Image 1 (cartoon, rainbow, N blue to C red):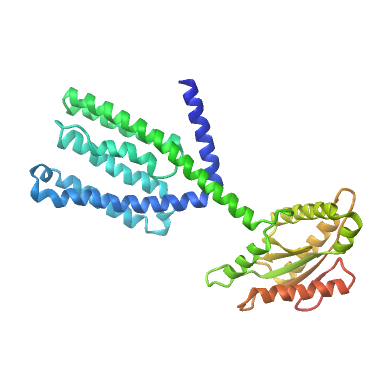
Image 2 (tube, rainbow, N blue to C red):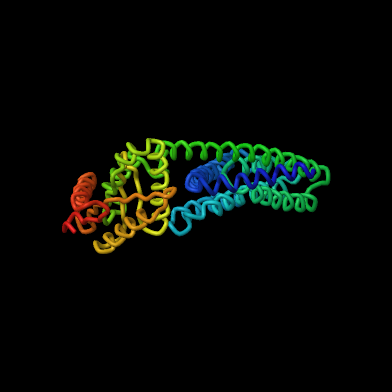
Length: 361
C-alpha cells in the first residue's frame, strides 16, 4: 500500500510539472474535451427522450432527462462567454456532475430494483476524458461514489445496493488507472512536441530564437490582429571575424554562448525578443517604446555587452535602431534592412556605438 501511494504521488508530481510546462496545449485539449462532453451529453439525454413513446419505463424519467438536457444547454451557453470560457475545468466537472446526478437518479429513484448502468460509465470515462491533477480526479470520483453508496443503501434493496457498490468501485479503480496512463501519454506527447519545437526554433549556440523563427514572427506581425512592434534593433558584434581568426572557432563559439546569455538576461527586464540573424548578427524586436526609450535601451544593451566578462576578455557591439511605431508596415523585413543600414553607419563611426536609422544619431 505504501509503495502504491509513493508511485501515485510521484505520478502526480510529474503530471503537475508537465502540465505546467505545457499549459497552453493542456488548456487547448481540455477546451476541446469540454465541447465534446457537452455535445455527447445532449445526445445521451436526447436518445432516451426520443425513445419515450416506445417505452413505458422511460416516461417516468422524462423530467430528469429534460432537466439534464437543459443543464447541458445552459453550460454550453455559459462556456461560450469570454468570462466563463477560461474556467474549462469547472465546466468539465460540472458537465460530468450532471451525468452523475442523472445516473444516480436512474439507479436509486427511477429503477431501485435494477443495477446501475450509466453511472458505471461515468466512473470509467471521467478520468479518461481530460487532463487534470490525478488527485482531484480521484477526489471527485470518491465524492460521487460515496453519494451513490449512501443513497443506494437507503433506497435500494440491500443486494442491489451491494452489487452497485462493488461495480462502481471496480469501475472507478479501472477509470483511475486507465486515466493516469492516458494523462501520462498525453502530457509526454505534449512535452515531446514542445522540445521538438524548441529545437527547430532555437539557435544551439546562443539559446536565442533562430532565423527561421524570426521570419515566422515577421509573417505573424503582418497579420491584422498581431501586436505591432515599436522598433527593431540590429546588433553586430565588433571585430568578430578577427576574434575567430586570432583565438579559433572554439573560442568564438564560447563567446557567442556568453553573448546569448547576456541578451537573454537583458530580455527579462525589457519588452524585447532576440533572434540570431546569422553569424555575429542579431535582431531584437521591441514593443511599446517611444523613439527616445528605444535609443536608451539600445545604449544600455551596448554598455551591458561591453561590461560582460568573457573569461577575462570583453567584446563590443554596434547597434542600429529602426523606429516604426507610427508607421503602417506591410513588410517588416524592410525595417530590418533599415536597422542594418544604421549598423553600418555605427561601424563607420568607429564601432561600439548606437545609431538611430531615422535621424542618423
